[in-house]
Amino acid sequence: MFSYRHAFHAGNHADVLKHTVLIQMLRYLNQKETPYMVVDTHAGAGVYALDGDYASKNAEYETGISRLWERKDLPEALADYVGLIKSMNPNGRLRYYPGSPYCAEKVLREQDRLRLFEMHPTEGRILEDNFRKLEAHEAAQGRGGGRGKRVLVQKSDGFLGLKALLPPPSRRGLVLIDPPYEDKNDYRRVRDALTDALARFATGTYAVWYPVLNRNESRQLPDKLKQLPCKDWLDVTLSISGPVPDGFGLRSSGMFILNPPWTLEKTLRGLMPYLVEVLGTDAAAGFTLESGVPVAPPSKVRDR
Image (tube, rainbow, N blue to C red; front, side, top):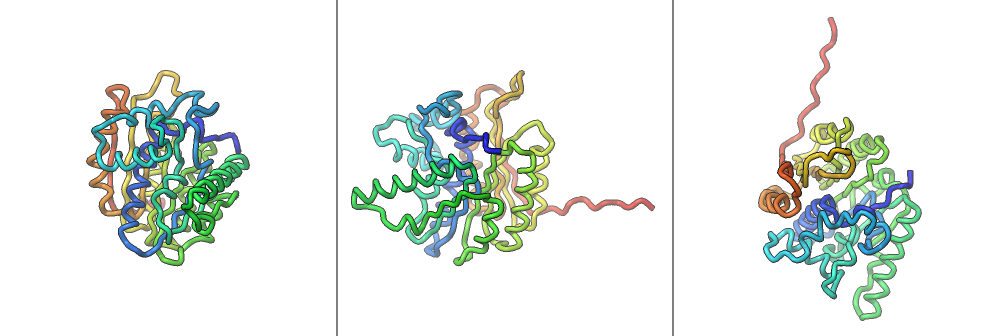
């Protein structure tokens, strides 16, 4: 149950897609002065050392952020994403990669709130330590203050913890759901959590990261999410190559957003071809981008 460590995958092509989309959604929310809450149900450790034992084992960041690091022709949304990561690596060397908690914290304003869940005992402890060190570092420089009120880490099940936070007091919020999917029950729990969340907070924005795999649960998840009672949805996938002979390794992933910002689809249509060109490794690389409104599941025909 606790075998998954995101550090093995930090900065890969899936992270590029996930974190670019996340940052753009938060930039949109920042356009209004009213505060909002961000909930990350599977927060991980927060920051990853790419030269550490886990990240360097397979060096998956070489399929993602490493290919963008020195580019001078980045589309605006990708330049925003890469710029955020460079702010964590001021000497210019790509060493540290921020997970979604740090990406969000960098974009949130003083009045906004960040609620982080991580059930893995080691990851949860590291996440708390990382934010504590960040607070101490900024305090030593005469900056910061108040992060303890704005950021709350809970070492518990994010699927369950989400219920108590919705709706947020300001009625503005974004929920990121990003489980490891090692347990096939995660697919069911994603849909169940969203069904409950939409009943509590129908106008919230919900972003689900998912792997595109050759298994029924993965293939069926987007279609099941399209049936949920939201205003509209957006589904984007990025594939860096076709299947490999041994069937191992993540080659494709997606972000499914319920109640997305109206600007997001246009942004993605501009940057996804670029990502395919730069991150793709063979002719099967590509992307999909769909949007729509909920569709009711097909009705069952009773035998007469």
